[in-house]
Length: 191
Image 1: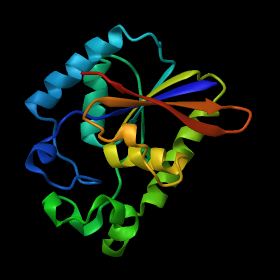
Image 2: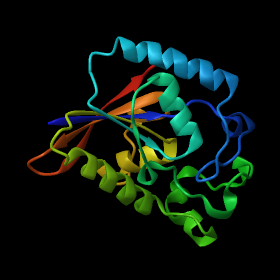
Image 3: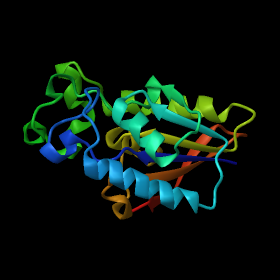
Image 4: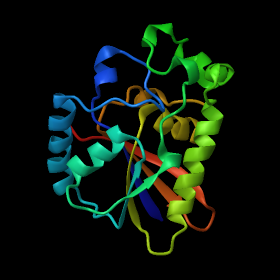
């Protein structure tokens, strides 16, 4: 079994402003920077030591990686990016539909479906895990993209005990090399 730890990026300006933030980007806030450093302290004492590090190519994710694990080498992967919300990018979140309707809603406005995001993320995680020299993998990604993976594993549902994914929370998954199956293990709070 291989382990994958997906961390959500730190708090951003658009998080604070309540704006839809997918493929568009906004910087980490001062709180986001301070919290990422605190998460780095948590990770120093974490029982797992990582072989490889990956981040979404988006600034907020790369900045989080560099604050949590200063001076490490990591690979940037477009496949770990947030969901594309199309024409809703950068607009107030109150314009969005409720969560259950978001599965396909944004595609009609130039965005992605939840299934497309799950396929992109699952494909990237599988490719990472199929590398022979990996055992414990750490990635920085995004809330909707991470939930897309969980929903894929649980047949489009999110178990009740998993409601809410905060900035700098981590989702732990395992990868079974004999079946290429990714399984959800636990939600970890770093703050």
